[in-house]
Length: 179
Image (cartoon, rainbow, N blue to C red):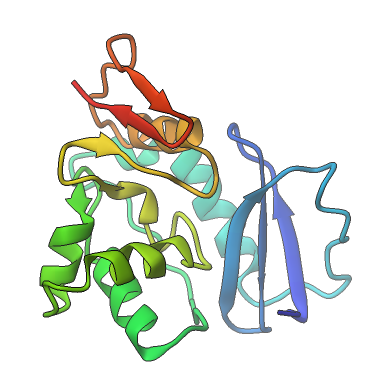
């Protein structure tokens, strides 16, 4: 998909590309600089300053207050009606909380849709703001994250989740057992 506006924001976990319309964010993901060759837009979108500021606040740990941290940015994720419902449910997973794919399926009223929920979660176009990194396996394992399982673990630690990664067992590149 082509977006008319694009910015790149540096973070401790890698560069983040944010794209969308003049008024709404439609895409936010971590990228590898050597893979992502596109340049930022010459004209800045309305959300440029607030997006940069909120991402900086997030990575500086300002979300560690008692209330946690919530992004307040204009988003417009593009997807099917089902994906939209899943992404809305992801947005309801608050700072400091985990949810499982099964819980998300229950939250959208379709307990038989666990795999479809996992698929919609994987297609989330606006990482961090729609917090797909807070979804873990029902068996208390970190499951795949398109940005990499190590980055997922670091995001959860950044949000003050107590993960004992020294005792974690790497099952494969996409799964870690949490203690």
